[in-house]
Length: 271
Image 1: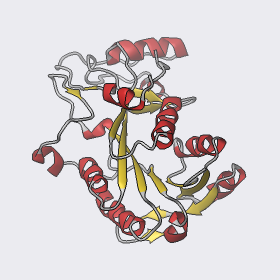
Image 2 (image 1 turned 90 degrees about the vertical axis):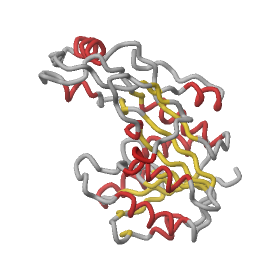
Image 3 (image 1 turned 90 degrees about the horizontal axis):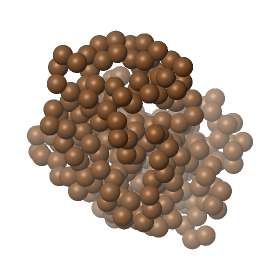
């Protein structure tokens, strides 16, 4: 297979099973983790493991060797801005980009989030072609991160924005169960199953579909209160309680162009 080595920056909940699936179809994988205790897990799966941690001023670990010989880099690291809103995610990405431009990497796939889009009482529909205003961009490191990577010279970059990630043992209703006064009961639900995330990324790589923006969300025809009540019932959990005193804010994420571009339908795994 031509260009058969891929570097995955962030072999965690999504990156690890993604790496295994890509190896199944013939790719060699270099994978990074921030914790040395996970090195053996990666090695046992056949992944060439690296301990790499991004700091605002430096990259800790052998990033040069991690990128060496790969033609595609998948950046799959959580920005961590909810826990640390003051942290400078952009500086970390700029350091990575500097190393990428000195390496053999020609294509870049950045795993982003539908969190780049604002919620509103009008429940706007956001497509892959949505153009951010300067005001939206100035207030969001997530948008700036996308633009930084999208505008990088000599790289063919694709960005994929995933909704909330769900998989075996991971479902938001488990955290919401029993909670009260939750906001936005009538907002739409924008989620995607891990299996669909992997299928989407695999399609992008195998079709060499770079230079595009993709959306990864499943169509769920329920509002948050309906969906989480149903999920709680199915899992035998106490349903969360919502506050209906304020208008709900939310958004609808369209993945229509993504499905057309890649020529396949996302499986409905969350109904």
